[in-house]
Length: 118
Length: 113
Image (tube, rainbow over the protein chains, first blue to last red):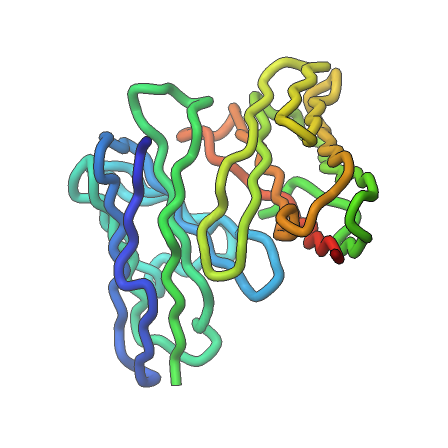
């Protein structure tokens, strides 16, 4: 089946540094990828929709200069948390939809990336 | 933005009991999915429903999509400890470019042996 891979799975960084998280679709092309943030025992909050070859669409309240998204190819999207602070610590999850299966197709999720900012 | 409200938020039951989780919204969705997530992992798809009134069964799990495509329910029969996890509904917003999926508030289920 389709696989989405996220890297790194865990990252610890100092306050003020930037962290990049990669999301790759391994065996399908993803025109659109989604980035979510999840706090412990809570649901997934959609942060932004990443579109290949164009600017990401951010949800209300999400700072686009803080969370930079790049979707340079049909198999890779990156999320960069710039000048990270402790309140950015969270579980970040990406998902992708197989473009060949249309808009109602299954979302395939990455394994998630646990960010801890000291 | 979370357009979907799930209830209950937390549920702890004994093995063998039945339970129902509800997913409600004021918005109409083109499709709705149910996921199960374990700690530290990404959600895993259980089912997709696309037609109002649709009922799907997956072993001991029964999923129903409301007639108006605004709500859904998940019923588990004879719950087992392996059913423990966070259950999430997610609706696809057909009016938004990219047809984003918005997740419900989540239901944390614990099945006690």
